[in-house]
Figure (tube, rainbow, N blue to C red):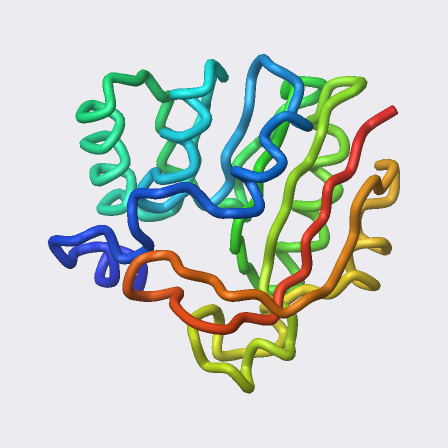
Length: 196
């Protein structure tokens, strides 16, 4: 599996600090149960746990999850780690106070249904916080998927997150400095949406 291979490097390829967008908007997430999608080596789930959230982290890479467990242990926090493919993982109904999706790039046939599952899985008042690369990212080559079909845009998110009220939605260029595999100028879409 490609992600097991990537995560098998001894260092944390995306670093151990949380994503900037998540860090800046932490106060917008209701305290409680939070689900981190495609959490990889655990930097975002550990940050959330350190800030008093009850965190479940899901990822398809067992190697990434092992690194996440190690990081959680080092930082003295408890996280529920789940090894699962997002194409098959059941997010549940009215389960989560918040769902965090940071650079969770999956093929369109998986992404559309996943985004609809997110809508159903959030509790009333629950919040989705998402950052992803846009197709523009391919010209920067500073990380992210090589295939534009795996990226996202504001227009696409509006279509796929029907059922949520979008509070913040912006496409922008920013410096993404996250470990060795995301470093440099990046073209991203950022979204915060709420289930009323």
